[in-house]
Image (cartoon, rainbow, N blue to C red; front, side, top):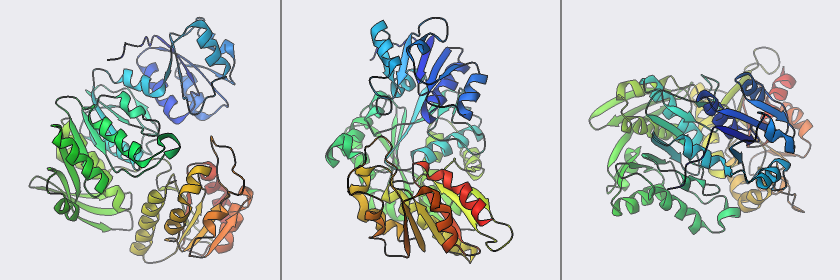
Amino acid sequence: MNAPIDLSRVHLIGIGGAGMSGLARILLDRGMTVTGSDAKDSRIVYALTAAGAKVAIGHARENLELAGELPTVVVTSFAAIPQDNPELVMAREAGIPIIRRSDLLAELMVGYQQVLLAGTHGKTSTTSMAVVAMQAAGLDPSFAIGGQLSKSGTNAHHGTGSAFVAEADESDASLLRYEPTVAVVTNIEPDHLDYFKTPEAYFQVFDDFADRISDEGTLVVCLDDDHAARLGKRTAARGIRVLGYGTSEAIARHPEVPVGVEIVSRQSTDFGSAVIMRVEDQDFDIDLHIPGAHMALNAAAALLAGRLVGGELDKLAAGLGAFTGVRRRFEHRGTITAGEFEGVRVFDDYAHHPTEVEAVLTAAQQKVAAEGSGRVIVAFQPHLYSRTIEFAAEFAEALSLADQVIVLEIYGAREEPVEGVTGEIISEKVTKPVTYVADFDKVAAAVKDVAKPGDLILTMGAGSVTHAAPEILRELA
């Protein structure tokens, strides 16, 4: 066990980020003194300030004294915040403990039923679905999510219930900081090899995560993903309780894993999917407002997680039917209602791995087919040079599910440019009509050149491409 952390005065570097801001909100709700800094002002920073946090724009040594005295702990992201950050330097000189966001989250979850949702893809959507379902069941969980719930517009909450729901991020092995009561693994596919170096090391972190489940806890695995199913089998062999969820076909492939939720059927609709889920001998008809087979699987995981912490099944199912999505997960950004491009809809999605791209574009094509008209156009921004090099062919294959493809320049994020590596190494492999657009300011015009009335347009990627969606709408209008 790690020693308790003094959270009476917490300073968060990068407080405006999706993860940090949520934990700051929970700390404020618990009555802690919260200070922080961020590189730029934002609506999130304004909201935290209004809630009682003291936030500085820009990084400086004196920011550690925003509350009139030094903090008891400083929270940082080791990936995003450089070690020579003046606030980190000051904290080290003053002997103030420096912890990661995952350490803070682990401390906030002490004493709760910890529901941790892990996997290569689908963590945010599944976590969000679980929260909404539990809220509908009256459980009022605390939660910390990597995105904002569309319905409530928030990414974190200090609840009155016994459960705390959160994502468990594997990218830097920080998920090993938690002690889950319920651990959900949606899927496992090698990623973040800049950190793990080998696929074997990446797979191992999920086994290690399963070993941290509490004595009375449960591992929940998706049986439609063979790697997750194998994890379930290995974990059960170590004496840990395991339940699976998935389609009838997947359940038949993995009879060794006890079934928690079975997806009996799924039908694409113009609004999403009509799904029948079976729990033991009881069937539930759920109309999901988010399209795609992957979202039906995520909903099954959420239903099972909610049940394991005491939620009533009918109320959980009703909550899933009312789920309206997460920001940047097939998020509807607008529709052109008149003129040359009447009926064009623009959606935005965070997909930035080939498997995610494939799932979202498949869902988009099913949606268009159910509606009976239109094409799918995707404007995709690759994320990270290392990921582009590793998966260029796989990205091209997945993007070719669209009817028209526009590939943007790579969003490097934390990485420095690599000579000769551009978005063109993906676009040249795409088998559908494709355009490579190196200038971000020309994306909207490129979309306009290929759009037709009734098309479904997707801006896609983990970087700045989300800002192209309103520009596209303005251009088409």
